[in-house]
Length: 254
Image (cartoon, rainbow, N blue to C red; front, side):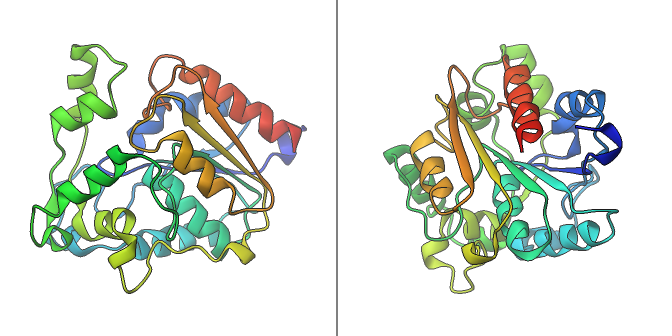
């Protein structure tokens, strides 16, 4: 592919994170000749979040990103991780998108969980009555066990120190879509016409292969792959280079 004709790339980070999560991934894409942007979701810019974060919706995140996409020179490639992968699917139905790469993406409205772990995680949140209107602080033990599990203890602490609070409203909309009367995480599948690549770690418990494959099956022009040996933080954990290279080779192929 001619470098001058490559589409711009927007990388969308996941919950409790920020643009820093894409540091290695973005550098590799830039080396391949792509113009990469990695915006911060609303109230995720590293500063102490405003109280309004508690009730910020997935729809608010998507609205902000849609405006940025409208200002881009040409239809971009969206790359989203975890909750960012859900936002990328929502935006693919709203905007003119060249392609989308969904890395361990949260599934959209209507896709049921495929594991007891997913069900248990969602139900455990219900023990915090009213969490949907709270600012949720990141929990080290949860992150270490299920998201950063392939790092050393020192590496886990280093990465976790960069985590930020997340919106209770957005978390509710993503994990408890069956109770969300606004259907914030719903994607109009008929409007998604771009090619999509779904990649998840074969050992991912947060966004397991079974659930991600169900999400991929919604779309006519989608490819699904489970990456052997990888977990949830496949954008930076050991072996991330293979995930990045697979993403790049898929882009070249289309």
